[in-house]
Length: 462
Image (cartoon, rainbow, N blue to C red; front, side, top):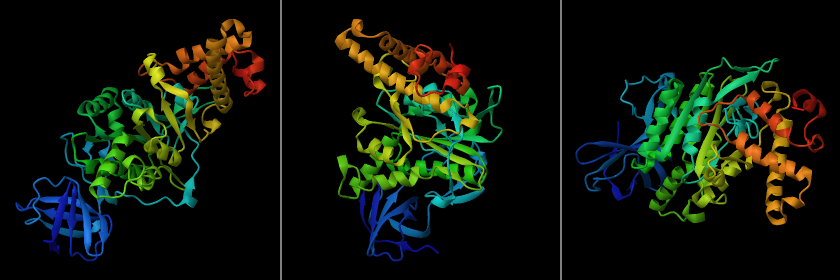
């Protein structure tokens, strides 16, 4: 039996303040009924003595404190999940958006998830092929990892995210260097927060046109949708991801864009609550809030599935020290940098290897024995080539040695053939490694100090 409280004191933005309440818990679900009897759902954000601060999911427009009533339901927000959600499009509130039939939930789960016991986590090292050389060959994505993409306004991170979602696959390499896709079930969950209608439609159209939609679930919150949905959406997506990964034994890739829009929504709600702001106005608990989502990625011992995350964020003013990328970098296991200079040169995908990092190494048995050595050698050689290019601008090319000129040529060819790929081009890991050796043949053998001589003899183009 619901107990309706007629003690709503104040309505501010998406928040409702209710007095004279008892036995109310944090994150408890609330129903608010207006004068016409329409119900709106929300959750408890804060409880102080007998006063509760409630956040409504659908906004407070038209809500009158005199006639409105509130009831506390005694449970946290739960989301109905099912395998049949793959191939469908949902709103930030978890409602069906594509006009298709209703889905019968297999079970209802708390959207906040349950922390993975650190002692039960398995170490991630199984390769996920994205088809993009600067990721697969230099900063590989592995099952159970959280690897964000740092971008900037106007850069093609949406196109990059859609390409990763379409091309991502768990693969292995046989003795004859043939790439084989795993027979294991693979799914993509795409969470778009605060995007424009055109961006949202771009993702849906790109999935449908390539046939990737049947193995994907898309959650969309556009810029004109309620802010609260933006906060809820990634948790709904991750709840479905956890169910498919740890109960249905799927390998799930969750792509979340744009985390900057999420953080801005968090800041707006914090301001409505009149909280003391932290850096640049963001709430002091933003690190903890982000961690509650990022740390849901991983593998669990004894479970066949995995949950991998690729959060995407646009850095305001391309500032890596902005609170959002800064805090994200502390929690996650590296980052992929999308570079404006490369983009302005017409390079796609404009992923800059310098500054990009994946802290987790791939199991070479799943790819090829030379992958780690090639990765180190390519990164070091490109960095040196860029340095020599800058030096040549000051001293002139005539002051350079033959080896220096080789490094300059390597850096140029690296950007032209390795970083640059045709839009939609899906390179296998073997293609990427073979291209790496082709480029390394530009350098003298004595400069290849990070690869074993037997690798040079076996794979080198000499």
